Image 1 (cartoon, one colour):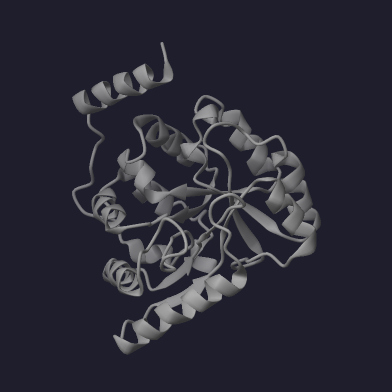
Image 2 (cartoon, rainbow, N blue to C red):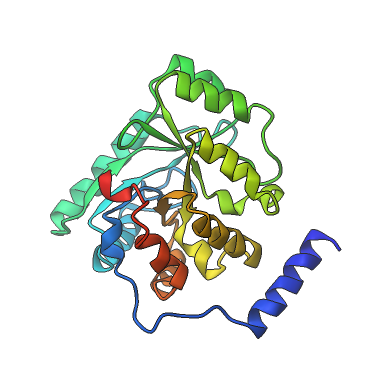
Length: 257
């Protein structure tokens, strides 16, 4: 059975047996800080304008999230952003939030794509971090990069603490939970996308997200918000029993950022 056929079959059974929902929504304010989003305008595939950024951040405020570390893509081939570009955009959004009286604390880091250009940056540049020197990284959705282990080791050797973004979205690891246990045991933090728990990306992603929660491997949660459509899903996923389980686990590091 091919991968697409498998996903279609999983989607069919998901519709037959929809996930259970809570009668009352979870309180997202306990997250304290969202550490993965794309709110710097017009520099990646996220927000298109300052107005768009402020609109989305207003929704976050109304959902109880009062602190945001937004993380634009930095990718060698597509989004060649620099700290200077990101800081400049951040100040524009901060200014507009202040003008509109929206009391959200907004900071910035980056979502680094693991390629050879990023590997070279580790020794040559000061990377954009959040919290206790955490660096958010993502990898290809097609296959594990050849240099992943070397990059992780180099990050740690240079005093950084790697955080792997949305591990539940990498298809080549869908049936390899042992890989995540290995990463976890090597002090690589795993950051789950909230909307994965709604099956937004795929049934297989949701299944893996739930398994990572069951195995107590998740240490960060993030919205990975790019547009208002993500917020619409977010407003529904607050009824997820697995989100409730994760928020009540006491394992998340978001509140300490």
